Picture 1: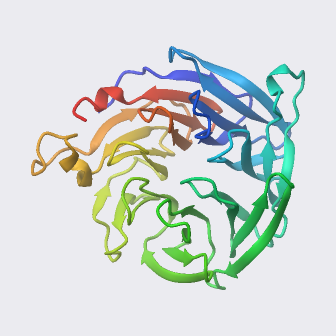
Picture 2: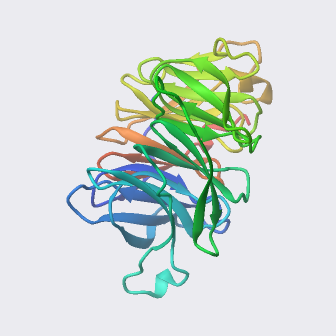
Amino acid sequence: MQGASSGVGYGLKYQARCISDVRADTDHTSFLTGTLSLKEENEVHLIRLSSGGTELVCEGLFSHPNEIWDLRSCPFDQRIFSTVYSSGESFGAAVWQIPELYGQLNSPQLEKIASLDSLVGKINCVLWWPSGKHEKLISIDQENIFSWNLDCSKKVSQVQSQESAGMLHYLSGGAWDPHDVNAVAATCESSVQFWDLRTMKKTNSIECTHVHDLEYDTRKKHILVTAEDESGIHIWDLRMPKVPIQELPGHAHWTWTVRCNPEYDGLILSAGTDSTVNLWLSSSSSEDGMVESPTKRFNPLLNTYTDYEDCVYSVAWSTREPWIFASLSYDGRVVVESVKPYLSKK
C-alpha cells in the first residue's frame, strides 16, 4: 500500500546519513541531524516540528569539523549528543554539548565534552542506554567493544573496560538492551553477538548474515528486530534464538535500518536503499487490538512512504509524540510523517 504524501519536509545543505529523536526534550517534538560532506564544513541541525505540525523549524545550526557517520541524542539531557566522524582518513568519536543560550548567539559553537579517543579501529557507533540516566557509554569499533565512564560536569571520559570480538569477527554496529543495562547486542558479518557488560564476555549469538541494523523492542523483553540486506526484517525472541519468530519482506533493495515504536506494540519502521520507508505491524501485536482478529492472517505492511529520491539510511520515532517519525534520505531531505491513520484500531 502506498499512501499519498502528507509529510512535512526540511532540506539540509549537504548529504546526510543520520537523524536522532531528542527524547529528553519533553516540550517539543525535536530531532538532531548531521551532514556528511568531505569537502565542506559539516553541520548539525536541531529541528523542531511546529505546534500545528505543519512546519519543520531550524532551532539551531552548528558547525561540526568532520563528516558525521553516526549521531545519537543523549536520552536524559536534550543539549548533549554524540557523533562518530571521519576526516576521510581516520575515524573518531566525541560527546558534544549545545550552548545554553544558543538561540541568542550569532554563531553558536558546539562544546566538546569528551573525546572517545582510546579507539584502535574504525569506530562504528556510540550507544547511550535508552531507558534513563546512566553514567556509561558504549562504543563499538571493528574489533572491540568499549565501556566508558562519562562525567559531563567534569568533561571527562575514561575507558572502564574493553574486549576484543576476536580475530575472525569484524563488528559493524550494535544496540543496548533497554530492559537490561548489562546487555549489548553487536552485529558482525554472519551473526549477532550478545555481550554481558559486567564481564565483557560474549554470552550467546544468533546466526544471520549481513545485518545492517538492529534494535531491541522497547516495550517487550527478549524481542530483537534485525534489518538484513536482501533478507528483509527478522523478529527474534531471544529465549528461542535458533530461528526468527517472524520474517517481514523488507525492501526491493537492501533493508538498511529498523526502528520499533516506543509506545505502540508491534509497530516497526524500516528504510532502505530503494528510497522508501515502510511501516509494519508485526503479528505478535495482534492480540492488542490493532487488527480485527488474533487468528486472522493479515498483511503486515501498513504503508510505504515514497517521498524520497535517494537512499534512506535513517529513521527515528518521536518519543514525545509516538505517532510521528522523521526520516532522512542521503540527499539531505528530512521528512516528518504521522502514522495516526494506521492507529485507528488501537
